[in-house]
Image 1 (cartoon, rainbow, N blue to C red):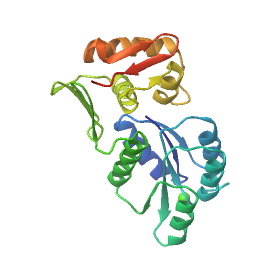
Image 2: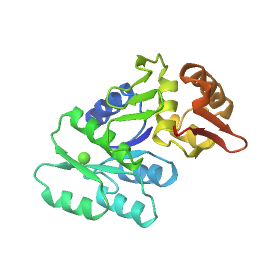
Image 3: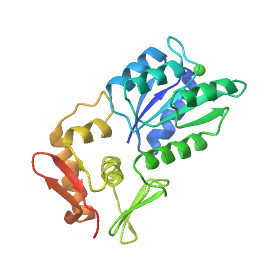
Image 4: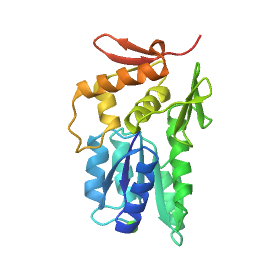
Length: 220
Ligand code: CA
């Protein structure tokens, strides 16, 4: 899952990015409004954390521009405690949720997990596919109740496929959602990861759709 983080407070940006990466998200960081708006307009993200008070372009304007351009990714806004009007403006502009500063980073993490789950149509923090269970809260996966030993890349791949169960997911889409913008993108890498993941979860669950990509099976 790939997240865009737009926050001009460098300390807060660093802390949030670190926590997100420790939870196996891929994170692109922006420190001002114009850069953040550009990234959200041109790159695919599974969720965005957007500070409202930003230099060069404020968060509400960014959000209005994205929504007007048809960008639908879930957005969590960060607002200052004494600026209740920012909250209202942010929600009116199309924010999906908000957190008021100062906050506990854990709260932001919980809200991001919930936004991503809801966007994928899952209400609970546990997603299952036959014998495979994904605990998005703990960033862990099990097979028949046994913990799966996955690398960070394998976990992200499994998580993305399970959030999109039954859908064909192209290699390009996977590459875009599993790596940050600076990664040297090579679609063969995805094939290697899929191959390794198949060995761990059982080959029958991840189908190759020739010429299109991969599909996580929906159990009968
Ligand atoms: Ca700010």
